[in-house]
Length: 315
Length: 101
Image (cartoon, rainbow over all chains, first blue to last red; front, top):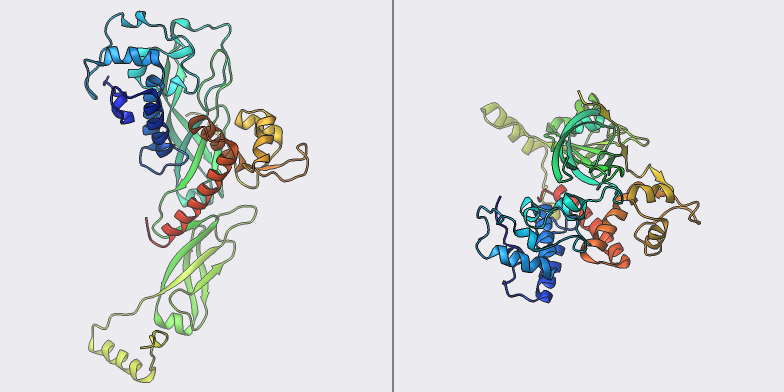
């Protein structure tokens, strides 16, 4: 396991005062808080910062860490000195804010397992609900439209036979309900972290995100599609075939349409109590003028259909 | 094959009573009442017994609890953060729509 330099993680010198440490922690905690931050790996950084603070804010843990930490640098392979933890007793007290299950192996190799495991674990008196777990799930728009079953693999904290907290990979088969929207969350009762001492399991929350789709874009329960049309389809109107999540449908283009004209296919968006609509936004595609005949046709148009599309620009 | 799990979708069509919201978020009624007073969550209904919370309230309560625990933000502060986060999310959505990343 790698040695962690908690001072480096908080960006403070080794001789920092408790106030310096607290200020550095608060600043980084705001920066990386998973509910607020958009930084990549915010959650991992937040945990790391929390772990560093958990050690450095507590004079007893800090002293112990300083003692063991003198010989190592960040990233180096670390082995705790034999029997060293006997000098300290980290029972209780230090885990007021943090969940030791979230901490690294490095932390646990020095400070043990907190009040929740190890030799101080008291089966008769300790009982707690497992932690709620949060995860994102990428869903195809087609699956959101039709409903689907997805298999996901997550790491869920559990207690092993010795009472240690370990990350246990778990495979779940989850129903994706028809009409689910991006940003919505699915709660799976009892599928979160394992309870302690007979306490109930936590819950698992899956936040839905849509996989980017080459054709469709979802906005809440409405679906958007850009539809290429020819100048004569736009000018004269007519029926064209349009893809929707539910299959192909025929759409009437009104005469005199332009690029950007938005047409609505009612009820063809994501299903629900009030189903969404599909909006079709037209984009005119002009045929290439790559033959003498095509060029002649364009010249005829220029002659017979004079138009200044830049009139509004005053030129 | 592992068995198929069906969850509940915490959307706006789901309405929760005070008791149900407390159970989902693992907090007591007093905590939720304090959050209602500060505008963290806004139920329909006049009296706590008649309160109905939309499914999205679960997320707001959970974030408020985490902000209280992790950053020591008080409830009015958490309500402000939540409103700003929602606005930020909406702006990001509009920005993405206009082709930004």
